[in-house]
Length: 106
Image (cartoon, rainbow, N blue to C red; front, side, top):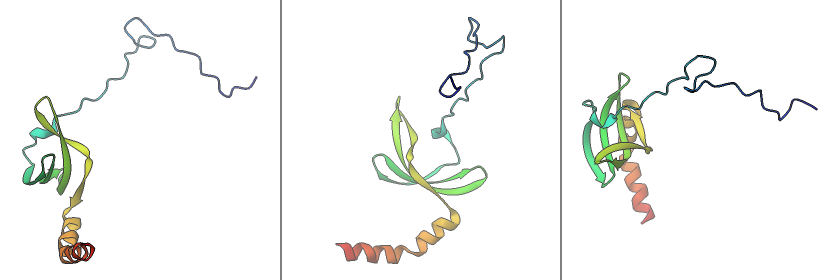
């Protein structure tokens, strides 16, 4: 028989879930980012979407994102985009072309 498809030997676990006396690795906990004081909410686009300017990892971002409510608090969802200041300026400079394209489609 070949070794393909065979699982490696199972490790023995102590009653506390540790392997050979070593504690299992701890999972990093998520922090509540809805309390960030660096977020400046510019506008609410709809009930669950908003535009904000925030400072994250030492850089300024324009964040357009969907939010969800959990236990009465709003949290940022995965759906959204964070634009650097350069990207925001590029988008802003092309607003007229975007509006023209929108007008052409209606």
